Image (cartoon, rainbow, N blue to C red; front, side, top):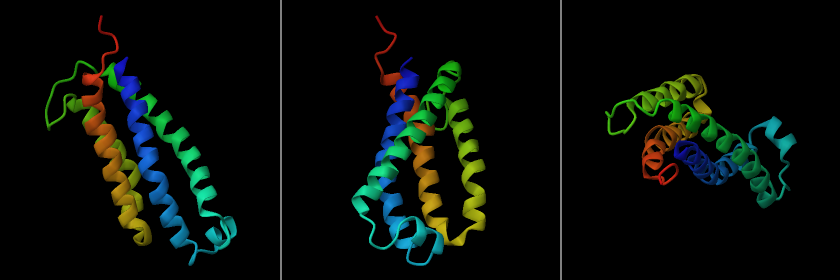
Length: 142
């Protein structure tokens, strides 16, 4: 079950990398967005804001990683290609990432760069690094 643990670790890495980036983007975007000005007024403590964002991201990203880890465990006998030890899983994550981020990248010009960076991070961590981490794990070996 090293796949599940690898998914958890990749999800936590994504949450660690995403919380400060999301906080910086939100604090900059609240200058022009009335909704964000109401959610986080200009006097809001940025450290507390990042702590709340990080808590939410940890739950969402590690939960997603656990589910993807279970899926990787189910697809453990797929072949190697494209620089990945599990090409079926990598293509699944690429398709899922494309499905989730393509509408945002195509339609929202204000957040296009941030969404593209997030999509690349998700694809690299979950689609490429996670199968390698599952191979490197010592779970299940005697």
